[in-house]
Image (cartoon, rainbow, N blue to C red):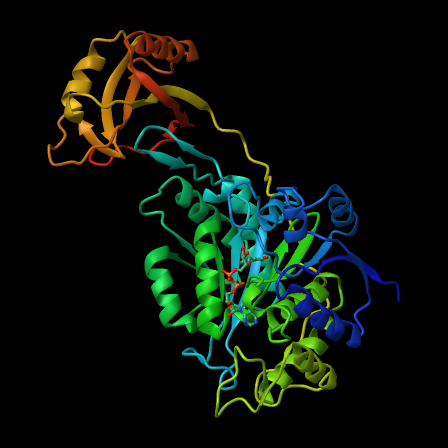
Length: 482
Ligand code: NAD
């Protein structure tokens, strides 16, 4: 059988030990893989490369398209870029898949019947990393949610459910507040969900949904979440299932995939043969499914379940009365190798369908472009005069020639403060001044003229956002209290 080349990084801290243990188990199980090692992480960072990865390593990743990665240490201090984020975004690994399962009664958990899969969007949301300090007091991080981004991740979640015989897909958003961004995620969830009639669908607001997940995870099956909610909740889910040390993850894109444990490099535990290799090994199981080796995946997974069931545990999951033998990293791997070919006796054995990996899409659906018209502009000002009295600002602005536009509202941190604001509202030095056209779509030159007039009157504008309609529907939110 021809072997599949995979790029392997042994990582930092406990990385080399858990990677050696995981590869040993996979190879003993007959995984037809050819390892191409790359060095990324701490050593490269400390040699002066702030990206932590060298051009040759990219060549290997782009050639092999499958990356098995042990945890890396990102040195403290500014300027060092996270390789995880760089790899995910450079290679377009948009879906982060994290199964969170409890192994009761063999591993302590408050949730004996938990079996959920979190599918986290990996590329956008607040993680676009577009941040600006705009005034003395105000800092901004842009939350970008795109239609292709939503379509890709949501379709992936439904396809994952179909391929893995799951019954329900749930989305969490905060679209009661973020009606446009989270609202888009919810809307696309409804649209794409309608194409999967055999799968049950539900949507929760993220706050109460998270509370429910932490309390009653058994009511959930597959969860699909925007990046930030998914980042936080997948760690919560892994921890309440038993331990973050047990969870593996897959980062999947159209052109490549990366498999890793969800925990970090635990430097304090390094070099002592203590660390639990389970998270990395279970991500290796996901990798076997991805490269079309479902039998190897099931063989390894079942041997691991059997070992956990036998009470052979590393220190992090060892509990008196439940565990039987406390072992180190190497001995744990050996115990799994001895169990290859066996099934668990109490826990449910796993089987993987031979359908290969889950289809990915570019997310670009054929849509009729909407009619976009610009009908106004929000001009953001840094202004710190007159005890920050919004009425004074309104009065000063009314004296500036507004290029045929009308000042309709001033808000501070989203709250309308002019006209007719409330004097109790706390104001910072950052003001959104909304100008609207009174007679249909405006010309961009009017905005330029307005900005010129504001600058000439001494106003410090820090950014603008155009107010557009799409097929007549407003593409912007109202001010709170407007
Ligand atoms: P961590 O996950 O490395 O460790 C936290 C604690 O969890 C450890 O002290 C240890 O007690 C325990 N632990 C974690 N994994 C374990 C395992 N396999 N077996 C036994 N115990 C385990 O988190 P941290 O200490 O916040 O981060 C350490 C470093 O890892 C940092 O440099 C961070 O940037 C990096 N990190 C890397 C990744 C990654 O490469 N994917 C992810 C998270 C953190």
